[in-house]
Length: 381
Ligand SMILES: C[S@@+](CC[C@H](N)C(=O)[O-])C[C@H]1O[C@@H](n2cnc3c(N)ncnc32)[C@H](O)[C@@H]1O
Image 1: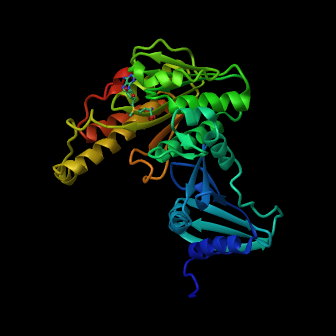
Image 2: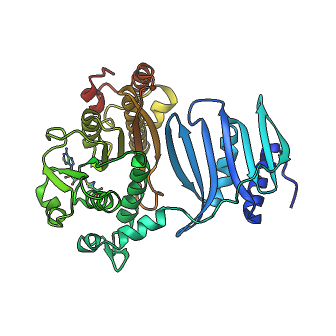
Image 3: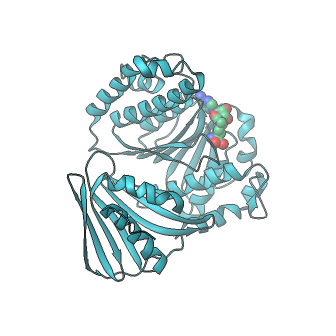
């Protein structure tokens, strides 16, 4: 095999070699050169779906984990190295310190700093998966059968499992019973999963309230009688909802996502999870100057641009309301093309004014005058 050329290539190759040799302890990136996460902790993990690399991004006080395919991890890491000045690869045999100054990287090898090789078993997710898949309510609702996804439900199950994982991570440091809202909850599968999960992991006292405008959709889940599980029949924007700790909305249609974000902000929730769908509101407003405007003549490109601009605007508007926001992949796109997830954590350190300015700039560039979340927040675009 030819010798990797650059220091960054050698750094990446050394990480893969350590994993292969079973000597990998940890890999940390720090010293960001721009906005975005200020640190990445990277480690290999084994999941039921195969080996992955877990990338935990730390932004402010927020940590977000993304699991990456080994085949794409090298390219992903090469991109990230371009965004960080420092990298430390710790193995049981050495420390490899990578520094980048003015875009030129160099490596320095040092002695091992101790630490056990990283275990390759995924610590918590398989357990939760097994938990969810073996619950009688999930069988009653037709989500699983004999511990496996029912026909036609594998993708929905994966989305729910992922949200329960992220939810669990978000509440890890919070004590006591919680109030959770699932807005635009449809049949209430996620709602039931969260209620059941909280009851099993925290005991009684928590409640999970699903809000849905069509009562027949929630009837079966309401009849489960799970502790803490409640449903409200109403429009999200009109419902009288209690203060909440966490608010979720999974594929609430079009501007119902904005209603959910606004309700989440009003509820005082510390954490919001929203995966949007059917981005119709901005599509007729979109226009842009020059080459971008020209590209928007193509319907499918305009559709995709509308999705991107809508969610980018939502992220800035959420920041303008005092949330530290990450936009991440909820699940791989084969499980749903609607796989963007906005995660917001309330954070006093967010520069709300700068986010409002950025939202206005984005709206101006794409000719957007009205957007539902901006309306809810009283932000003039
Ligand atoms: C695509 S389904 C998603 C359901 C569920 N969250 C899931 O992912 O399985 C969207 C649901 O949101 C409900 N919905 C849409 N707009 C709503 C609104 N403004 N208020 C309450 N429910 C709404 C619809 O009736 C539908 O059941």
